[in-house]
Image (cartoon, rainbow, N blue to C red):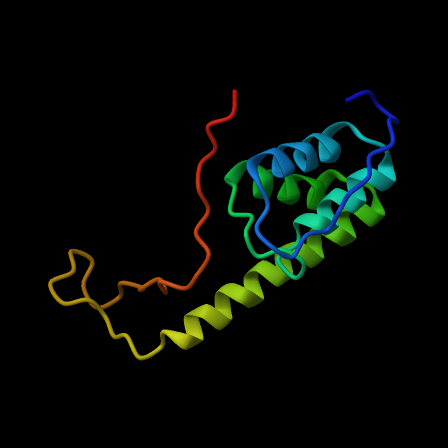
Length: 124
C-alpha cells in the first residue's frame, strides 16, 4: 500500500478473517496517519475480541513506543484493554491453586483457559 493511500476501516465486533487482519496490519505500516490510527482502533479488544495474532500485537506495541501522538494513544488504549481482559479472565479462574508435582513448585502461575492466547504468525 502506498504512503498516503486512503484506507477505509470497517470495525467488526464478530471475528475477523485473516485477510481483514492482513489489511489492517498493512494499514498500520503503510497507510496515512489517520488510517494507521483507525487500524489500531479496529484491532483493539474493546471493539474486537478475536485478534490474537502475535505480529499484530508486536506492531501495536511498536506503535505505542514509536508512533505519532494519536497512534501512541490508540496503542496504549488497546494494550490497556488487553491487560484488563486478561486480568478479568484470571479473576474468573482464581479458584485454581498451584499445580501439584510442578517442576517449578508452588510458584507456578496458572493461565486461565479463558485468557486470550497470542499465536505466532505464518505470514510470508
